[in-house]
Image (cartoon, rainbow, N blue to C red; front, side, top):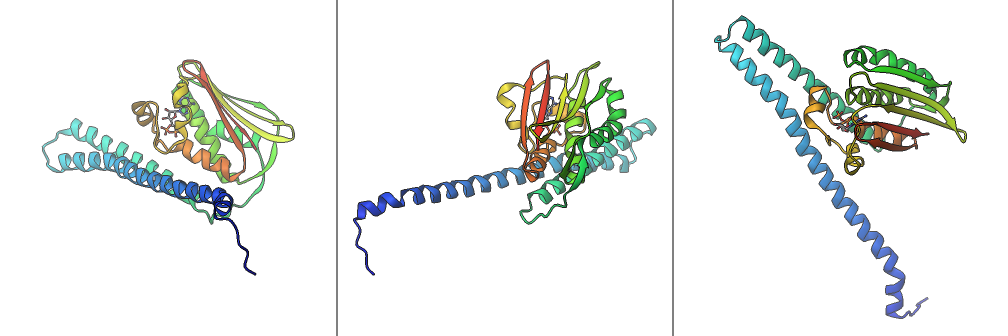
Length: 252
Ligand code: ADP
């Protein structure tokens, strides 16, 4: 059958498809640009500690440094090696989470138990920063990937401790709202300026680069959190006020 249609009519009908194709094209371009930026950032981030390691090792090898200097340089090499290790670990985690074929194993996990476990593992760092850790709420069993949920909670708590103030506190709350499991991590720390709140989930984005680095941050923690939240079909909201504190709420 041959159906004759008015050309302008065809164009009208095609409009939604044309705009869909245009949008897909823009998405591909944005994705390519993001990948390019990520690669550039990765090389930069990896080069910094590597340059330090190679420089200090060269100084020691020259035989011109004395006892105390040598110990100091060796310590710098150690710190840079640890930084490199943290970066590589996070980059691997992100690339695993990026894999669209990723099949996650889900099991029943109790958010409250994970909170307890997290507080236990963060205790030493919290003591060092003079920050107190608290757990509120009740048992919340839910279906999730245990390893990833542990990682998510650890990243959020680690941030809440590192971007805190002396004498500050971190509270993990596990609860159920409208039958949905809820996890809240809140702190009385330095807060995040309004205009940067959306950007902190981008890879390598930091509000204060020097503080992030000196406390062992890779700039990838919240990007990993965002991926884990998506893998669990959950919603995340961030509320923060400079000088008052930050709260991240995840509704599963
Ligand atoms: P980092 O390794 O630098 O901590 P993240 O991806 O975990 O990287 O966080 C990105 C940035 O967001 C941090 O560098 C910091 O500036 C800011 N940030 C994250 N969590 C908090 C928080 N609880 N309080 C204040 N600032 C935060």
